[in-house]
Amino acid sequence: MRELRVGLIGAGFMGKAHSLAYAAMPMFFWPAPAIPVRAVIAEATEELAAEGAARFGFESSTGDWRRVIEDPSIDIVDIATPNHLHPEMAIAAAEAGKHIICEKPLARNAAEAKTMLDAVSAAGVVNMVAFNYRRTPAVALAKKYIDEGAIGEILNFRGTYLQDWSADPASPLSWRFQSAIAGSGAVGDIGTHIIDLARYLAGDITSVIGIARTIVPERPKQSGGRDALGTSRTGGELGPVDVDDEMVTMLRFANGAVGSLEATRNGYGRNNFITFEIHGTLGSLFFNYERRDELQVCFADDPSDRRGFRTVYTGPAHPYGEGLWPIPALGIGYGETKIIEAYDFVSAIVNGTPVRPNFEDGYRISLVADAILESSRTQQWVDVDG
Ligand code: NAI
Ligand code: SOE
Image (cartoon, rainbow, N blue to C red; front, side, top):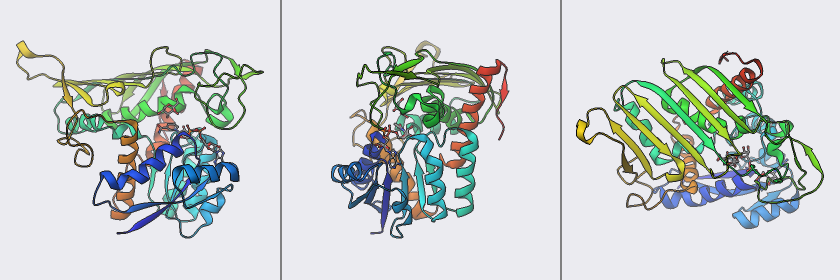
């Protein structure tokens, strides 16, 4: 069976998720399109890289990510570092002819994302941006129902992504609170996930008006480059937060639908509360990632005395069901979304088929994010145009 050699850059939270996905993908999807070989892992230092290789099962390690790009045996470059490093790494990888999967957001802003899109377009390499939540089977099922016309024309998309890991002002000033590294805050970090779902399910977004604001202006400085995601309390010297903590926005879609999005990392009690409710002319769909085996559906032609939301538990009859677990509701997790992502990416390389979301989608999502931030500054509707 064909093998594809992977060079992974970054051994943090996403380094772990992607390594798991490469190892597990053939166990779920068999026969696998190809076997991903965990070949080399790069980190900020030789020590971190060696630790990453030992932990995540890579053949070798390096403290210099350029060695991954220069290695002729590497087929796939996987970028799982903080956002400011994505453009330089992706452009170098494209110029070296590598297939690229890059973590979200594609870059700190749309201008940077465009340089990455141009590079992969010129190189003709397979490219994907890791907005994995659309690969939750219940989300893919919502897409299937919409494409089949089961809820008719879409009228309204309401989306949220609510978390609370940074609600405590004592949680550390990680890279996610620094615009030079992250680009923006809740808008870029989690807002882009729900923008991806809005575009995937309801179509292109044409204009926005929103509010993005910072709630905690200073946080204790953190030592080390890896984000502790609110779990450590350093209590030391404070440094400035120069990104947004939450955003609320209204949307207009190209197909005439309207919608709203909210994102916060300061909503006590909400953990990974990615929800959408979609109203169509023939029915409605509701999804909550915290109950991610379930899609709530209501169809207009249900008998009026039985009308109401009911629950479909995803399983073998649904998207990706052939590779996952044999009984509905055994439990889909975050790991499965990354395994499916790896499967679709590797399949695209082997079969020469398109894969989404690609860098074009990543760029268009960044345009929406930038427009939300601009409308927050101007308090005007802003057109999304690239
Ligand atoms: P993290 O802070 O846990 O890990 C980042 C790693 O990159 C650290 O280990 C750091 O030492 C390493 N790194 C920094 N500079 C480097 C360099 N020059 N060369 C090699 N490695 C370097 O961050 P996390 O959470 O893994 O985030 C990474 C990316 O993944 C970000 O773009 C983030 O937005 C995205 N992400 C996506 C998620 C999703 O659900 N799709 C979930 C979490 C993060
Ligand atoms: C923190 O908000 C974070 O790790 C995001 O960066 C991810 O993209 C999200 O999926 C989980 O939460």
